[in-house]
Length: 138
Image 1: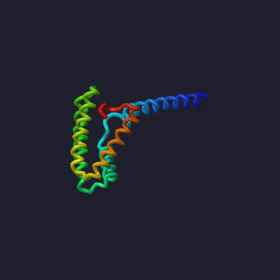
Image 2: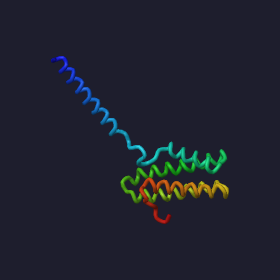
Image 3: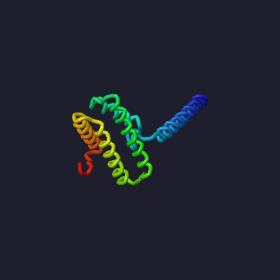
Image 4: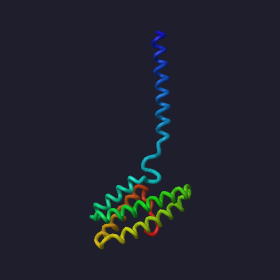
């Protein structure tokens, strides 16, 4: 009987230790899908644009450079404005406007129409994720 009781104590302690390490590990992970995106998402956006706009290899490379430059600029701004949502939002809007203007210079008329449609779809997706929140002047 003592041997079974001792085994139960060891098993119980093992479960507690396992739960502690699991809980500790899960709290240490950054939240997924929240906060600032990583460069993988930027690369996926460029790939999606290349397909939807039928970009040439040269156009894709140039658009990619523009998008990654905007990504890096936004990441720096995010770090500098940490905690000030309004400042982050305004800065991000300016960066995106600059990115879109530069990207459109590389596109022909048909691609520009498709790009505008792509941007509108992106805005609508964001609004759905944000629960109907919309940007002013849009």
